[in-house]
Image 1 (cartoon, rainbow, N blue to C red):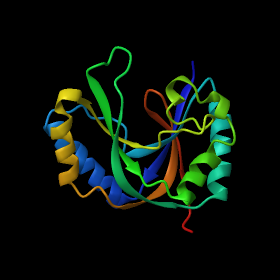
Image 2 (cartoon, helix red, strand yellow):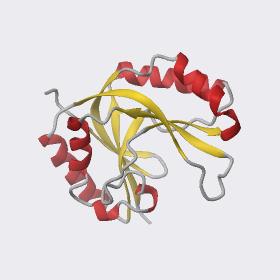
Image 3 (cartoon, rainbow, N blue to C red):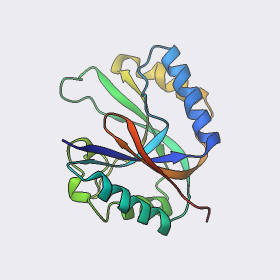
Image 4 (cartoon, one colour):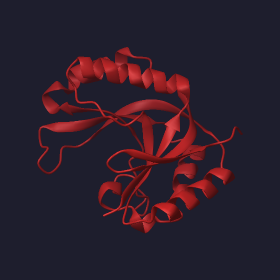
Amino acid sequence: MNRYVVLARFDKNTEEKLIALRREMTNAGYASSEWPPHITLAAYEDLDAEALCDWTGKFVREHTRQKLAFGSVSLLPPYATHRETAVLCLNPVHAKPFVDFYYAFHEKYESFCKGIGSFSAVSEDKPVIHCTLSVVRITELQDALELVFQNDVFTQAEVTALEIYTYPMRLIKRFDLTRA
């Protein structure tokens, strides 16, 4: 089965802050992602990679970099066999320009956002737009949140590129967004 994810990547300053936080969380014993800091724009199953690259290239030519602000944290709840852990996330403020950008990307191939793509799908008008920080044991959430709050991550950011990866992670192609 073909699985792909499209990641919205950040400016260098934001990326450095998120990597520093991730390093602190890893040093404190929390599970950390191998993925670069990002917001998952979409995740697909059974979609042709060339078609996805063509669509992403067209989309990037028609859009510019996106400014956003991280304003809150959230949790993706425990599920299935992972009942003791939750995914700790940083959330962008749902400003209309970025939300419109997010939804516009889904105009094509939304029907392939299933399985791994269920959190990013817009078909039911309830995507969970987030930047994953760490997987945390429920009993350790307060300590993990304190680490997040001690770092300067509630800040302005800019989406500078979209990247397509296989799932598991292998970069296929990067598409840089132009300045507005």
